Amino acid sequence: MASLIGIAALAGALWWGLFGLKPYDIKAEELQARYAYSPPATGLQVQLQEQPQHAQALRFTSFDGSEVQGRLVYPSDPALAAKPFPLLIGLHALGRGNVRWWQEANKGQPTVEQTHRITALALQQGYAVLALDARRHGHRKDPNHTVLDLMDELHLWGKREPYERMIVDTVRDYRLLLDWVQTQPQLDASRIRVAGYSMGAQMALLLGSLDARIQSVLAIVPPHLDNKVAVAAPRNAVSGLAGKRVWLLSADDDEYASAAQNQALFEALPTADKQHLRFPGGHLLPAAYVEGLRPWF
Image (cartoon, rainbow, N blue to C red; front, top):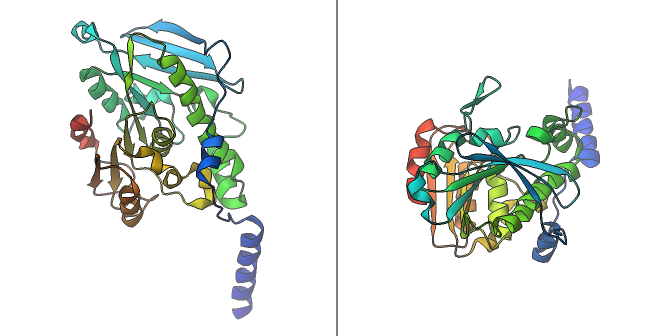
């Protein structure tokens, strides 16, 4: 028995030595450089296709030649169109797609994150709402190498580069699109907010930290990330949230972030305009949480 335990311990140590993720440090200027992007010389060309219910499908070619798809929806009340619309950018969770910001179900599976209800609330408040598919998600999914494969490679084999690139390049896609937003007279580029659930919350914190055009961030149950994936960890970028409005929603028994880790993240936010809303249960918040977001708008 003792020999079996010794073999298991040796195997564990060998795995850790070969594949275990090791933390690394990243400087502020290195972080900024990783999230920088090069806009087209002629400006970003966004293709729009009219859809029912005051919506437009949008498509553009990103900084690296990849195609990005998403959707932009406007309030239906014509009385709200007297001035340019403030904009809410919605970022979806891992394994989801931009449709989760519009539909209560997709392919027979309910939108348990309730992000479609956040969209409805934003439209009632007079906001336009925009969401894109993250890299490796939605229209950008690779059936031969799914995001679950990518996560397995990260945790089992220490391959962090594909995961970090997915996060970094998705944030860069949004930063590039913000250039276009600033040229649209129907959108108020001085009033841009971002909201995200889980992985979307992680990216919302990064986007809000690294781009001065974002004034307010709503981070719903972001996973805890340390310096094993330093470039994708919001804690390394939060200095950019100084003076902005930031709400953190967390769960006391979240599988991906402990109560202590969530509290440490909240305390690290360098702004006086912040709130921490805590909920019982796990990573999936009670459906009624959306009603408590009205003051954030």
